[in-house]
Amino acid sequence: MPSIYVMGEVRRPGSVEIRRRVTPLTAVAMAGGFTDRAAPQEVLVVRFARDGSFEHWTFDVESLLAGEGAGEPFALHPDDVVYISKSRIAKVDQFVDQYLRRVLPFQLSVGASYGLGGLDAR
Image (cartoon, rainbow, N blue to C red):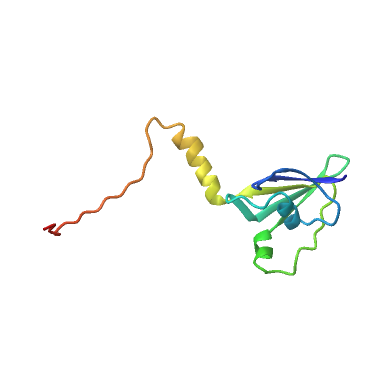
């Protein structure tokens, strides 16, 4: 059976068999949908040629889900790779975790306090 490959921020990354017309949006659905860290406005499709060259396209699936645009006419071919990148906030979170929390010799924390000045607890 022909397959496509869905990678990145989907719930079940890996190969997906295609038995009918598949678009980038339906490929994401077949892979379990987006994770909460996904950037649905940056869905990349890569198609490799026999000579090693490739073509690529980027789709804003978020606008399709919102009902904007004329639809999604792009059909995937066998062996296409669909990659869903992380959202900007997920990239920042990963940076903080990898380069600050794991490297710095002290704990990062955020706190707040407030006073009840002037209140009498009688």
